[in-house]
Image 1: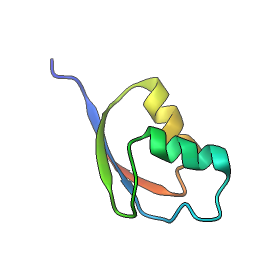
Image 2 (image 1 turned 30 degrees about the vertical axis):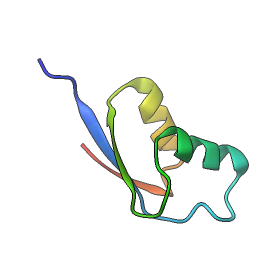
Image 3 (image 1 turned 45 degrees about the horizontal axis):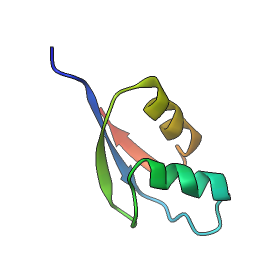
Length: 60
């Protein structure tokens, strides 16, 4: 069975957000607005997405 993935897109600017939220966005591999990353569907990645859910959009 193939490994499941999640596509995460940065849809809101990180300007004015908390420093640890900015670090989480960078940890997800997102740099600029509307940039996307395809990540493995792991509990760690899901936790990171949940932490910055107001900044990102994710597709299963």
